Image (cartoon, rainbow over the protein chains, first blue to last red):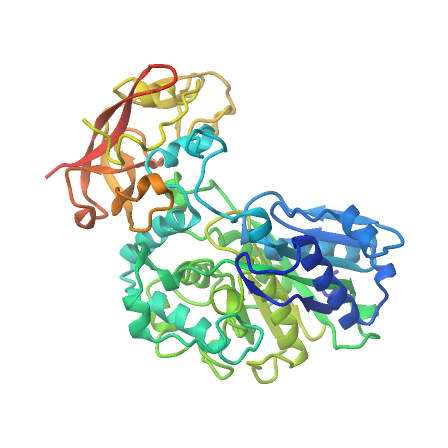
Length: 390
Length: 143
């Protein structure tokens, strides 16, 4: 079963600063999907499935019509949440293709915040006189000015740093690695805009312990891939990126009001299932992409995924250990959410495929296995492991 | 006591789940009538026994700061004059396992520390729509 499906094509639109896309969100989605299909070397008409995650507005029926799809057989999405579900979306496509329900499934993410407003913005459930309504679940935090994902993740991070003696430098190291790797990537919005440690520390606080540069920017754009059987992918244009294992989950308990999960990224269960299903260990991974909406939670995810111990994770990321193709731990090689673009993590999927193909702008030598870990701090978390062979 | 985040900051919209918490003047948490389990935030079903009948548990409101983050960026225009403010998650001794969000009264945001012992206090507000008096739980550091 594992390795039965693979990514055969990847594509993306140009990435833009928030609100600067000249295309509608639907047009961005279509551009990314068309490019992924062209990259795979198949016909648009032969696409038979669409998968996305987290309140994707561009519906599969609308896409199928616009793109001339002959027959739609698989339309699926994860539940509302955030970037936690990016790898779970690939898992949904893997499930469809491995089970034979569909043959060429598109997985994608598109966002145009100029058209639709900001994702993850402060707010309650909608219209009050001042635009805020602290109703229902929002009352418990919003009443106290606890409104945003940054603030929620900051509370997790502060406790993790307190418990394990983590300094601000460790968060800085994650951010600087993303910026450094983005300098090699012409697609990256931070390409040509390097960041120094001094500039990091001088940047304003958003919410402690996150400086401005710990928070990924907001962008417009779209990215997509094609999932098909590994057998078919081997006959197509590019070497397949085989899906060795994918996992999603969390528990017991959920959220920042549960003491068991306060200093957690919600990845312990994902980690256990991913490594067991793949029959592999963290040290078998050649290159990893970790979703970093906020730099610091990567440190928690690194621990929960088995790459470092909480008391050793600061040393694990220090001294440039995450930067460049020859890094001690090759990480977010396209620049990640912080350096390349915040397409809710989907660009991390495409970068992993490039690493498997040997075509990254920050190519690690002899990549056989590439990992994507989805958004930390919300649940269910998800991760996917790609390989050159199934 | 005036409101930590200012008189113009949005008030909770009262409902059957949160009315006692935000109006009683006692730190009142949801307790399962069937098994006595206390959970927060309230839910329709008890996470311990799946019961669906609840009453209120009146906590003594003595606890500990389990995490603190100081908000510097005002994420809403009404908070522009209120930053920086400390957001805390508090555990209470008589209802272990749960965390309650709040702000800290009487201490500079930068001086709030994980591990500080705290006691509940209440800030007064009037719901402009219903005229109902709110007593919003907040936290004071015990020195």
